[in-house]
Image (cartoon, helix red, strand yellow):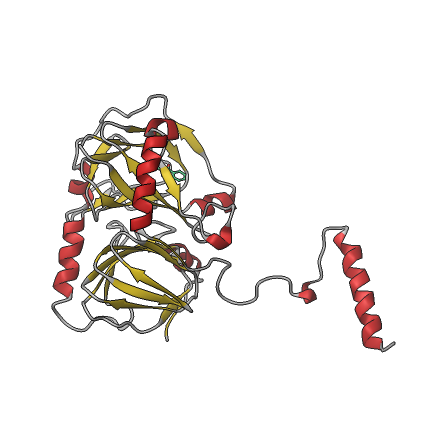
Length: 342
Ligand code: 1HN
């Protein structure tokens, strides 16, 4: 027997022996070495999802469900409920006259409104009406409930940074003693304080998350459309803006970065990758995306995920407006974030 084989069997025996003491040899390299995660590209097509949301509305009330949400779980992360290792995504529906009761939790949440008018979210006593294309912020540990005072179902995409709270062992949640909060601040209060390129002169916003509760679509869209009339688009992103916390100039959340981009009709993007796993939601337009070897055709309200460090590129058959969120804010804050235009 060669000495290498002897060493091999000795090492195998050694590994087994130390396993009993909850140890493993680093030299067996069982851990991931290299960028990327276990998550895989996936898409949830509106044409398939919309009827399922309708069925969910027949099966359970918003009150009984607490939140009537279909979770978008990454097929490679089964059992986690997450769409990437760090982020949650779900589609929530609320019918006319329904209420989703008040609670609070440590994770931050975002809403991107997909369909319907007349729903509101109330955050710490302030009601915010939600309209299609709006990006609405629910800072962590704020009381929030939702209601629909309109005549049609309202659907939105929920994004949460749940995994961060879980990893840190800091995931707290609490129910409010009553179903709904009574309004304690007038509608439009936070928009006036923080959403007009002005800030309170004395005591600013507390906390880590943007105090602007809603970023209305018409303003975001107008900004992008104006940009698209001037200069050249980024080779990979087209015209892309990030939502800012007006107090810090940084990202809207300490963990999640949130974006909207405009791809002009005929756009054929360069391949790009970055370390932030990203959830995209098409809001307007038609096109396609290649993610590694995977191709998805894209239509309005489709949601898809580009995992960390997977190369992807866009094609636009019509002018496209695409919303997205990722864990880039956390990665930048911690010094991990990287990108490359390929
Ligand atoms: C939650 O509180 C909401 O408040 C939505 O609308 C989705 C997913 C997991 C945990 C809490 C909401 C959620 C959630």
